[in-house]
Image 1 (cartoon, helix red, strand yellow):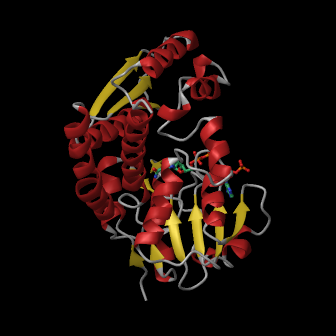
Image 2 (cartoon, helix red, strand yellow):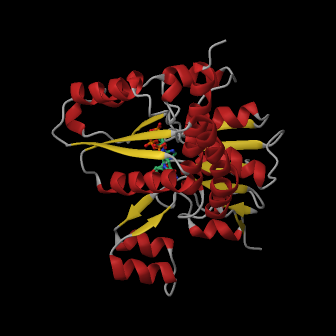
Length: 314
Ligand code: NDP
């Protein structure tokens, strides 16, 4: 039987329109201003341009003030840090997001230095050491948007987590590690896999919930998946190689036809054949991506609410 498709796009629209937007309206009524989100974009990476545009659009749609702070690719690390400091002090901004990746010319530790500079209470990406530490201790924190969006999806789709075996493929700071931790905090038994894991397919095949976050198009094949398992595809890979596209989609598939028209196709880390064995599966696009943006909106609203609550004299 074909896997049930977990429609992240529809859930994202529902949460943004029915849950976040009314709270934003109430916030504006009570505080005379909208929650404010500042997005810093350095350079001109085309994928980043698209992600930033989508985040600004969602921010405006829920009623935020959403500002783009753009710096040229030739900017220095000191300029980026000065901008972050200004946004830390800004009364109008409750959330700050610095879009990754930063230009390579800024140096190998630029991202870390920039994230470290963001005030933790405005860190709506959940990347600062303070928020990561709080999350590890299961204390209230701003939590990374992709893994928290996946938990939201599993919970709302009534996919049991407690007592289940989850495998997370990928151990990055922004997806794999926090994902594994959040699943563990919900009482899953978690295996973390990475590029050095021997016999990855056999390890993944034990999982009731399999999360793929590797950036490798179609890595997860049918033999990785226990029949009936839930498979969450985090990957967003732009395929331009006709051989890879032909391996992913059979002849006559509409997405292969579209690839031939456009010369590229966006795919996940999970091979489409997995739909034949999985019980439930997130599509790419339209699965995890829209929920990541929704959690960014949720974090910004929470950051705004916490900030005004702190400003009230006791
Ligand atoms: P990173 O490149 O930081 O991490 C990739 C991880 O995958 C690493 O831990 C790496 O292992 C592991 N890996 C790579 N190849 C293999 C392999 N062949 N077998 C097993 N493990 C492997 O990527 P991110 O975590 O930042 O992102 C992962 C994917 O998710 C990307 O496609 C990205 O575009 C997408 N993404 C999507 C988001 C969304 O909203 N949908 C948000 C964020 C990311 P090792 O540590 O050993 O190198």
